[in-house]
Image (cartoon, protein in one colour):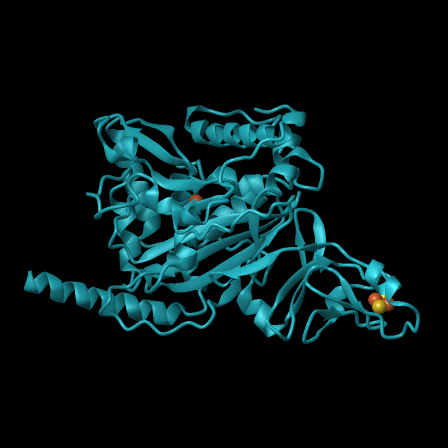
Length: 462
Ligand code: FES
Ligand SMILES: [Fe+2]
């Protein structure tokens, strides 16, 4: 439980707020390159600021204040020129640094033009995303996290603008236990209501519940702890029937990379195809752009088409009747976060032992906000070019060969390798998760099939 003041301290992201000042120390993904290529001038809102993102005809990115300083029309209806963005109303032209370059209807002096400068922030492209930095100089380096830059990855970006504060999505990252009910029991209930529930033991919803009941029958308890590293922490979990030497306890899983990147691994092993990040970018105090960034890494032998730009799709949260979509994993998460309220009232909550990782994240967040308030630099601000290439691969367990499977849940974990197989209900396992929304879903299914053949041949030879 937090006091109302503590809750504000952690959740607010506007200019001048403690949390907003922390967030202004990081580069944030604000848009996708795929969308910007379709239309090179876009309105964006990030950390409570209304801005316009553009790519001029020379290919240069710009991120400037939304309002034209002449008579305040929105630059989002502007025209990208060879250099800079031109206001649609009277033609004032601004470059990526916000400097006014032309005032074509003014006959008067150059001085006026030179004195006009609008707010502008640095922006750059990485991994099919446009990243922005809204903080003080000197501008830090953009860390090249592994999946954004990895060679031979097939990328897909799926997202949704959620009507809630970013911390709700983030707290879910530490909430390992929720999978049993949100992705098991609720999943079953939703399919039951639609007449689609099957007894397929390999389906995610049944496998999760089977595991849960087995543990309950044996009176096995699970405890959690954060395992801190230089970028954040991995999530340690230990069943009461496991040894403390277990990798789930010593290495942990699903690194949280501060402030809000979640990486899946390392427990799934080095040979895994489906890798992804999830992140919830604070648009403002009550809106979050939640993204799942997929990077499928198929065996060398599988033909993977060249991607100029990773495609993006906005996932729906509700169906045509206005009802929540609840029959895949990420949708279940998004609905749970949104339904905590615009900003969850943490002064009313009652936390249990299973929430210890949620508390660990809050404490980490508070400590980093405090640092900025003291005029110091928070974690994960990169200034050394030698340290920005896939830095998280140095997290223990992320390097080296595939570890022996040693996971919290036995049956549920392998279904992601069976995405191309048909479940008893007649749909493919890929449709149990957000991967089903990927623009290239069918192609991904084909490549999973091809990968299985490759592996079968390798097994034959071995
Ligand atoms: S309002 Fe933009 S040039 Fe006049
Ligand atoms: Fe979840």
